[in-house]
Amino acid sequence: MNQIAKDVSLALFDRVESEVRSYVRSFPVLFDRGVGTTLTAADGQEYLDFFGGAGALNYGHNNPAFKQALIDYIERDGIVHSLDLATTAKKAFIEAFERYILKPRGLTYKLQFTGPTGANAVEAALKLARQVTGRSNIVSFTGSYHGVSAGSLAATANKDMRAAVGFPLAHVTSLPYEGYLGNSFDTIAYLEKLLVDPSSGFDTPAAVILEAVQGEGGINPASVEWLRRLRELTSRHGIVLILDDIQAGVGRTGKFFSFEPSGIVPDIITLSKSLSAYGTPMALVLIRPDLDVWKPAAHTGTFRGNNLAFVTARAALETYWSDSRFEDEIARKSAILATELAAIAADYPSLGLSVRGRGLMYGLVSPKDHSLPARVSKEAFARRLVLETAGSYGEVLKFMPALTIAEADLRRGLSIIRDSIRTVQDSTAASL
Image (cartoon, rainbow, N blue to C red; front, side, top):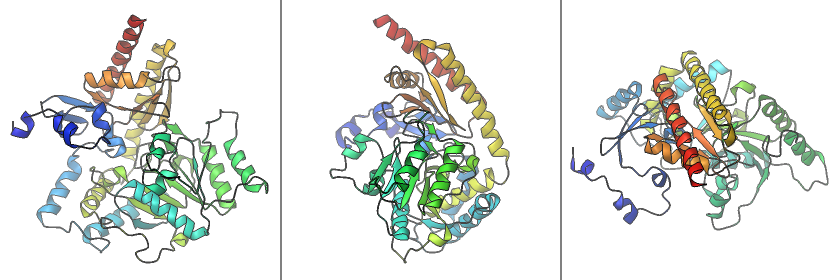
């Protein structure tokens, strides 16, 4: 064991790193290696990963299907940094994306490579929508998460995140997402009323931005009907529809794009996280061709050409998206996850748990006790399973295992969850 691995203390991070650090507080271990769905700490302990880099590791850690391609590229001195210059790696990615993603789905988009974060892709999408329409306001939804840079944060709903910016966030109107006010309240009809009523005090926005399945907001999937009605409404009123598929895309909800089951075609799509396939940063904006009104360098950035990400992203498309087998495998595992979570909820009726989600993006919701998911997550981590919580109050236990996870590991993780809930429930009962 090397010297670094011998010292497993986190004291250095406490002493030197900013207080802004987050996930390490929930998972206070010095991690060293990752293979597939297994994380290995510096002390040799192995952890099962149901966190997936918050959606950045859909294909698992160090997927061998991509690793050698990346090693080969580096060893031959392939271009690493290139701004937006043309490179062979970028060309190969574009060709693969067009061949395996766009053409089979009948989609035609221009590709914009922004700075490598999802937030930067959102910033670009919002700027472009405002340029195209000449309007300033944006509609986002309750429960939304689009990033924490100033523009994307204005479209993000979380109160604490918004407060951190230090100045008023303007030019975004937050409206209720589907189901936010109960199943009987028609949120699309509400938006339409605002648009057509001359006394609503609501100006036609430049764009509507949304997630088809909200992640940080608590695993809230929009229905097919709701998405179709929103698409029709925005088209009729000349409003740009931006679909943020940064977390829910790239197969996470079963199809490459989370909106595919609805059949809608967004005007702009933002992608990042697992697009690179290897955990390296990469972001992409898909633009309806007639909306591509950018002037050269109107949205720029030093790292908008991550060639290492292009290499692994291309390999992922060729490996997993050349036919339907990967989608079929996700569907099979999704059925296992949904069935087992429903069984867990049924086994603890006093907790009032419910299940929601799609693909391999699911939530176990605790409406009665908002502290329960955090306590279950902590207990699961003690049993060496990593998973996070989500939702306005942390009321959702969030399941995002790798799409490539073996069935045995999926079932093992769910068994840990079941045991963790039992332990937490028994502990709660004992303290009463």
